[in-house]
Length: 147
Image (cartoon, rainbow, N blue to C red; front, side, top):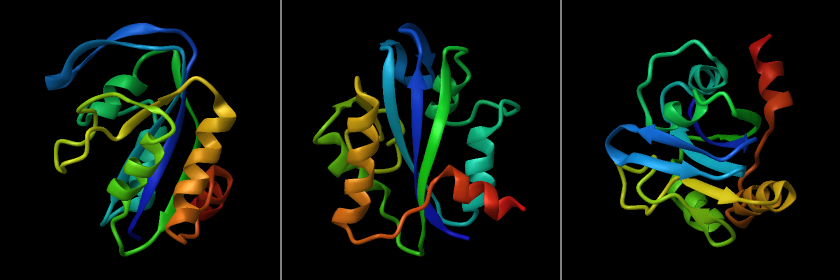
């Protein structure tokens, strides 16, 4: 199964985090959207992000291993079309980009967008999918796929 996804991440407390080649930076308390794609293995990729048991491989892994950070929702699409960059560009218009995060394989400024407000964060993600006329699903639906 192929597709793109947005992790809705709650950072409960600001902290300094070292992120691979990007280096050390402050990640503020609030909400982040991480935009990614899995063009061969959508379900295993999302499961990996949700798991606490993983090796550090991607930028997002550094953020997710922080004990004040947790994934609150996953909004995703099942599609052959890779839409992560167009989603990131739309979402970044309403949030604050964490420069160079998660975009080493494309020309985007960032695939991690910060929001201080949860409702604005989630509404912006949904509008990004709607803007492209893409059906999307949430974490509850994802859990039903695992059964």
